[in-house]
Image (cartoon, rainbow, N blue to C red; front, top):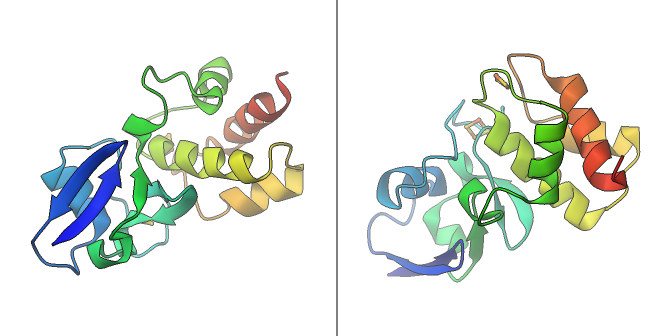
Length: 150
Ligand code: FES
Ligand code: FES
């Protein structure tokens, strides 16, 4: 039996311990904000926080999150008003939206660890999050807004 905390709620899983966290979140917990893109840690669409760190849930087994705190896009802020989410709206970032939960989770983990990242640090941290709509400029703008308030 695996116990974990998801968005402040205690969960238990007595199924396959090798099940990827992504599928537990989407299919068992009904938290469909976290997206499946590649399943191979190549796109970042499935990014969530585990103990505050950005991780790719598609390659993270349930056994690896036993006793851990997991945060998904649904748990980032109760009303969608995390500073990164506000900045995302201000910069009008999304196009199709598919990659955006992963982008926001990656960016919010970055700012938690480095509240005022440089251009280079933003690009380095966000390099593994692919946006097929090419919203990279606005993503970077939004991260600057969230980090500087301007
Ligand atoms: S679905 Fe996990 S990185 Fe692409
Ligand atoms: S907004 Fe469409 S993939 Fe990023």
